[in-house]
Image (spheres, rainbow, N blue to C red):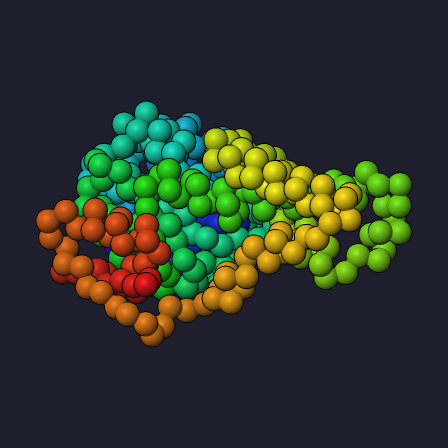
Length: 323
């Protein structure tokens, strides 16, 4: 497979590095001349413009900031091959699908989002190992071409050694709000609270692991976080309202010197069954879904229940089954 990567930031750069390391024919580009030169110095094949990165490519990744997606999608549409598939790495899916559709590429699009990252940005922060073996969300709608979906799933579970949860855009955006976007907002508020406190300097001098871990993503470029959160405003607002209600309930308990047991034990079942961090998918039940009939709907049904695709062949998709 030949791949084009448009955007050489943290995720696009890490993606291009990993694909190249796995022997995939990949050409990348970026709007920044400095990023292009850095990528060339790292051994990547880099084009000077979007046209050079997408011409002749079978699969094109859009790895640009969300607010640049519409303009870049239109530029890609002018140079992409007639049968090429378009995907992306964006943390919000609904607005990206709309931008791609408006560029005339809707019938070629399969959404994708690697669930990995750091608080850093730019090609200089990219790493060949950042996306190696990570879980991906892959999103579809009623118009998704099954062959294009198979192409994206094959790349994710093959050269990228990852797993894939096939979801709708709305399901992805709701999940991303819960496990990514709201944590960014909460981390930012933790940092804001200390930044505005009269004892700020003393607090920062004494801060240790809990503050470091709780605020890590608050050191992400604020403009990037703002774009991510506002592009997913509906789902983020809904999740934040529950967070605010729960915190207000705790506040009332504390002010009344009452027990807060229910709040601190509400997630006991998760603590007992889930270990934070990257874990390989091994063991457990496996299911084969033949790539025939309406197989994308079958994957959607299973993945919405927690199963993930771990392998794709010409004839079937293999899932790690969640019971």
